[in-house]
Image (cartoon, rainbow, N blue to C red; front, top):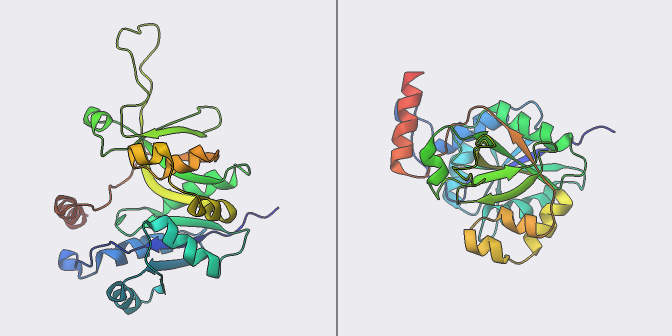
Length: 245
């Protein structure tokens, strides 16, 4: 059976419309250009409820769908998918602030989902190499089965916990969750039609709602990832990276 072609929606509702130094491009254009380079994606759609974002996106040739008001990007993507996607489509959600996303990361996510027919959705993770990330609650960690790559839990706490006196086993590798998702259409609809769950509210992590619904979430592993832009410091760091390349 042929794997379905994924459609990619970019949620730019909260993206900064900032010009990137000497490159003279809005930040969202960098993200859009990067994901358009993925050979496995047949359509890239910018989903937003902002007329300003729609105008800017249209200026560089992007397809834009203006949505209603939503609490989160997943709900916005579900609205767009209901109008343009078939039941067999994979629907990817890349936040507009992921300006450093690489086409290879998109390909890894798609491959992970396509290789797991039982998966309801998929996401990405990267090995944690900095001790401070393990302890930082803004860095979401994920644990998954080594055999199946199926997600077991996501948390802002340090997971897996390692007892320092457990000398009989080596310290397990911790993984940082990357907030890029792929959904089977039917599960995306079910997820967005379900109320927030207890664990989701406790950790403020929407993917925990999926786990509490019994979802099979497959995890693709990447070796490198450039953190998205959430703060002015992130923006300045990305400028420095761009100017050095």
